Length: 147
Image 1 (tube, rainbow, N blue to C red):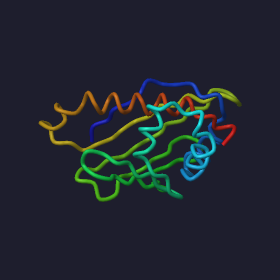
Image 2 (image 1 turned 180 degrees about the vertical axis):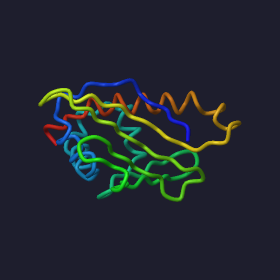
Image 3 (image 1 turned 30 degrees about the vertical axis):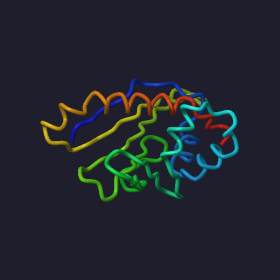
Image 4 (image 1 turned 135 degrees about the vertical axis):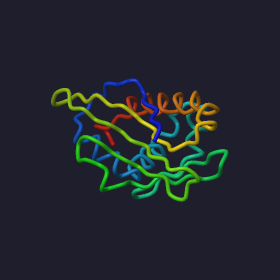
């Protein structure tokens, strides 16, 4: 399985709180709806392609809708959150690694894991790395302590 990781990012919140929020995507939906007027136009366009459920996130992609469901067995409380794609042509995991720095600071890394054929990997690896990096940046901007 190929892995594409973001650069580590510091989040000004404890790992336990981040974990509890990211394992409940409906909280993110509520915050987006509440603060829609504060989200810039480009970000809103990207958010229009995402649907948040109780324990899943659905993303519209060029291949159609991809639903990522929380993998409770692979996730580790306060350390690792894993979402796995359902009905995807290739196995896909979206992983958020959390490392406690101190009581109020967490280092996070976003990771996309895919099982791609070699020829396809060469065609999309740049886009996947960019996607992991953008996802990592997005995580660092979420005000977890106010969700």
